[in-house]
Length: 81
Image 1 (cartoon, rainbow, N blue to C red):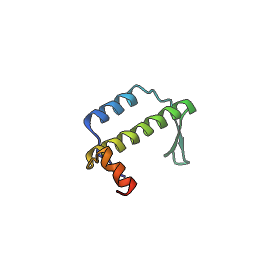
Image 2 (image 1 turned 180 degrees about the vertical axis):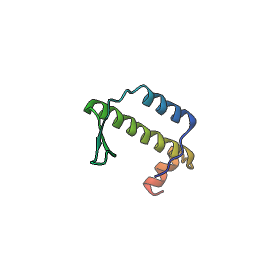
Image 3 (image 1 turned 90 degrees about the horizontal axis):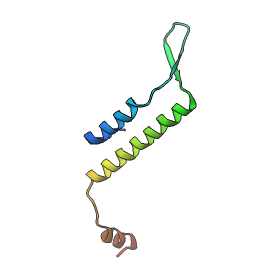
Image 4 (image 1 turned 135 degrees about the horizontal axis):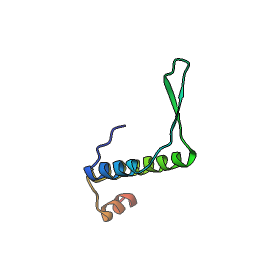
């Protein structure tokens, strides 16, 4: 899925990510290659909240870029008039 974000949205998300210290631990395979990351649950919840906010911002930006419909026109269409 590809979304186009406004510069303001990118800056806000980046600032939040920079202020979130992560205490990740790596899971490696027998060759020493990183295969997964383990985070404390509280940090994972914060990352998840930021991802959900990112999705909301993307949906808002996408809706804003589409052709808007007035409230009255939407109601008329909904009621079938």
